[in-house]
Length: 323
View: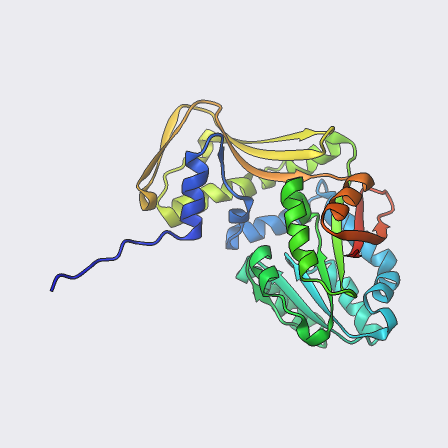
């Protein structure tokens, strides 16, 4: 009897790389920046003086933790704190400590695409705040959202910090928010961080630092293709380029080929042709104003019930609920 050999099934990474590099214009998803090296680079980015977003949200939490606690534990009811894209939890720990001081009844469920990041967060919480009940979950936002349950009737507070919503175009953000809204009960809340429109140079500096950390972070997707898929990208033949449109509030990141070249990716049996100065779009970071956030909420079946801003009004955290 002849043995039937099944064809190899492509991983999602392989599918996305093939699709992105054979499309026009070329693109690669920013979610593939993240592996152990990418996680470490992003931690460096969050501590750069140019990357104001982390400090702004840190300021908001420090100055408004009592009001946020009252909002989350309305009437003293227990709640499940679900954080999408938890990262190192530096900002969230401010709230967790305050919730414990106030003896609030809550469980913390951090969700991140990186198992490495989740393990680091869980270990740091065990050392710094061992009293917190933690249920980490690895996966993408959308995978995680599909698996969020009613939690036996416990109130859900879904946090989406760091202006991660800005990685989505407006139509994608509406679909994302609709998915969240569909999983929310009447008393659940969505606590979302949004970077505001501001001096364009401030924004450009945050995504194109002089030390090249953001460049290395973007190029990490090429390193992953080389290491995991047998690619032969020469990183020195690509530059990182950032643009910002103050009219739309859209910042975009690109990797730009400096020369005509051919890149081979063995696992995909693929040859990719680049013309000199051809781009790979890697990331979007949307900036907002109040009217845009109100519109996104309205289109998604949500409404803003509160908001908090930092001392310089560069950034806002909005509290949303179902209409």
